[in-house]
Image (cartoon, rainbow, N blue to C red; front, side):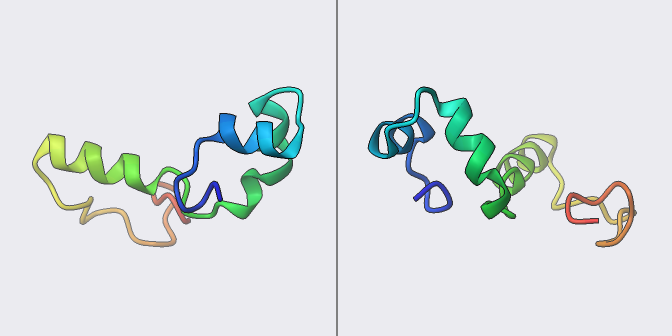
Length: 64
């Protein structure tokens, strides 16, 4: 549910967790694409379509 965009607060309530932090602590590793949407937004704000100097396996790469 988190990966498709449901609020972590809502998922925490559904699962009976005491806080969203508990939910993320258990399930964040199931979200490999987390952060990629934000990077896309920042790239758009900066007027670029990705960093041509950062390869997929470089330390600067989100997935590296």
